[in-house]
Image (cartoon, rainbow, N blue to C red):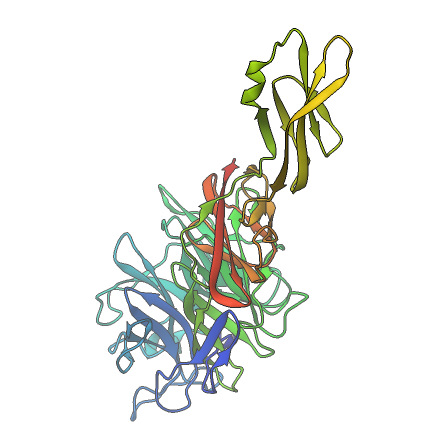
Length: 465
């Protein structure tokens, strides 16, 4: 149980500034207590800390550590705006930790110790395990706590609940038998009879190490911490999707979120532009605020395939006797076409010469040139987005951008927005669409020589079952 409560993080050093994300320490409580499991609900930041709460009575767990309690602090402009206070000041003396909220019944799902009184804990012959309970969001204590109806053997730890936006799926962590490591990620679905049997997320997600602290973003990404993946440095932050074909291969967050220390317990805002995370990169488990510096772009223009096909017509040819005279269009790409009006497609951009010659139909002799002009064909000044028009949900799709058609423009990088939530960076990016539907894929670039010079283009993609 104690080990499950030790995958935490926070900052008290100078801000870490990157090109895309700023990470700053958050001072929430006085002293040197550990803090973890941040989540924001209705402009309130909730978190857990092992700070001592009673000067006269002090309970310790079986490893002589302080128990974790839940705290709350109001936010203004995404930052704490008042001192933190206990969420349940009259709560039970043992662990009350990570929470999530059910948006449909005004309740919290709370991680807490199974036995909630000293007498019951002492009467038990086993360690007091972690469990998940449901509590009213206006509760003043734990008197109305109701055990979450998940069919699990008593004595197993069950912690860190995370609900999907529709409230139909809950993710949590457990060390029950049959898993892949010390603690695994599990999930259950809501049915007409309650919650389904807990299902292990499987070997795509779970490892021989520890998986913990799930969080479900509005985009459908399932963030979690893991210590057992090949690229893990201690506990690191990853995300996956749950599709009809199962979980996608987890993606490690970049070094602005993951340090060489333990990083875990992340919360992302609805647009995934800011949030809070935990880390012990400064020696203690502490909480950090982060915000994306993803640039804002003007209204995107629709992507248009460059068209180098034209209809050529010379009005003066109407004055010629078409029984005697013929007309030959000559193009500098080496092709010719006969007729007063012709259609012609050039291979691509470039400088071309076009001429119209009149010839004698009987002798075949060239008589004279009626028209002679140059054409300078340029691609539309837009970001070229290469991608399929139709993809299947749950399958990775690669998106590639090219800004070379924008004259005198040196892109700093390529910034993607997929739908309303997902933001990615890079000239070539991969994405998995977890749901069928029509999505807008937008790509923007900033000129390296003029930060105010921006170009943004979009295309639509259809995702099918």
